[in-house]
Length: 317
Ligand code: BYC
Image (cartoon, protein in one colour):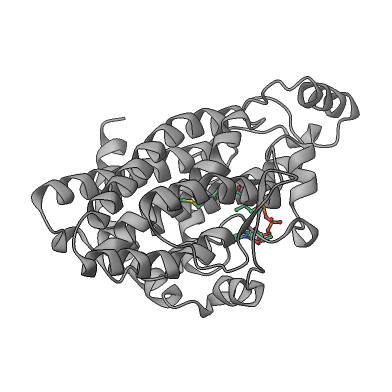
């Protein structure tokens, strides 16, 4: 599969560089056939592929509950959400293909540990309250991070993000609605929700990436208009957005330092455990090995489908 042909002979052409710079400065879109610097192309492939991998790996922790959903209604909702995540992965892999990447190679890179996926999916979903908390906090963080990506400078990525964000908003609401229902239930259900919030709060804050001072890619990605805001700015927005939702829900966020700063109108919060973040990124999270083992088994087990589809397409081309 692939690949938008790229004129590598022009890779360092100063005239084209100036045209590219002017497009970025005017806040217009770069499209697949446009000339682009190699660093821009590589950064996009890295970020979009990681995002695609996150969507696909992200199907696992929630998919684990499909056979144990507490009612038919909850099962239908969860099934639709997990299917949506597969669709997001496919839009995003398609966007990488417009940059000349091959999705099978990207999947191999993920499985071999040469590309990352979001740290958040290395944590287990222990109860059905986790399904609600993942929807509320993880999809909530994803929306905060991804809405600005609808204005990303690369056209296919920005357009994919518009649809993804609409669906993520729906996911966030279904999670919140599930939690509201549980909070109106028994003491045991309320305790399950609080326990899930305690476990997912800090990892959700880590989704936004390292602090700005330790983020090697942010400055260049923002200059290119790939990212629109820094990691810390988006993390702060997420905290400010989530605190009133937690109050309404009736749960306590597990941070004694969390407090509204009356001068700025924003919330101060405690220190994030960046040692844990690094450990999870380097394979030491609770579920890293399990996630990749399952992804590998799926790739290998489904290879015959790809082979059959390819053979059919070639025969009927
Ligand atoms: N997990 O220089 P930085 C979802 C890596 S939501 C793992 O700040 P950048 C979903 C980073 O890649 C999740 N790795 O990087 C939701 C870089 O490593 P490399 C997916 C992380 O790219 C609900 C290094 O740390 N969302 O899928 O400027 C249901 C230094 O970081 C993380 C997206 O991918 C992390 N949390 O900024 C289902 C959104 N944070 O590549 C599914 C698009 C950082 O140099 N992505 N790293 O080896 C982004 O906005 C940016 O890529 C990030 C990182 C903010 C994540």
